[in-house]
Amino acid sequence: MPTGKQGCVTVSKTTDGKYFASILFAFEPEKIVAKNPAIGVDLGLKDFAITSEAEKHNQTKPVQRKLKKLERNKKRKQGKLARKKGTSNRKKAKNIVAKVCKSREIREYFLQELSRKIAYENQVIVVEDLAVKNMVKNPNLARGISDLGWGMFLTMLKYKAERYGHDYVEINRFFPSSQLCAETLLPIPELQKGFDSLKVRFVDCPNCGKKHDRDINAAIDIKNEGLRMLALGTSATAIGGDVRPKRSGRKKSTVVEAISREDGSLHHTLSGLV
Image 1 (cartoon, rainbow, N blue to C red):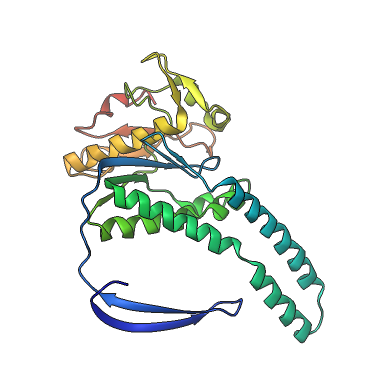
Image 2 (cartoon, rainbow, N blue to C red):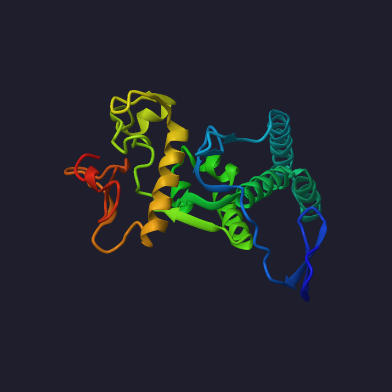
């Protein structure tokens, strides 16, 4: 428990009948000397978090199996709830459904542990400024994104980085991190084919001659762009340049390509190429 001046205490009750007490403390945050200078984090559906240090973070297989079992049990109980008639019966069935909804607690524990680890060990944490609310409007991805909890994870990562005295940097969501070679900063043709290229996990770069894991490559690009922004003391939409979506000439497309143009940027030579 942190030491400091104690504030208010808030008692809350969950839908499954559990009580929790939140105690507010006012104290000076402890600054931690990180063992790593910087890290880039790319979020995905196949792997939850991929870092520029070539680490891929997911829940363990036993936990994944437990979550699937809980989801099946939850669906059965929700089916029984839908068939219940009468206020008393529906209330009882609703309480039963609430008690089997443990998946949220398991996922939140995973997000808390992973965000603490990344925020504690790295001086600079760089992520993409994801528009999660807009992304869940896609009917094909909505369920997967909502279950993963990207928005909650980024919120945890930010406040924990600030607590430890570390830098939390968000780069523009239109920056083409998934299309640039981390070695040469030039576009990889194989990754410029729209959503079909998501099936491709490893690519050969004709510029540097190396095979890249596309997710790790993107995380490295994210880290480098965040460090550039810190070095220049600017944002991705600074005066003299911008990062904007490339418009289609005839029909509005859901595929967003990005053109990075900013004075002083290592990527300014890509204008017109991406």
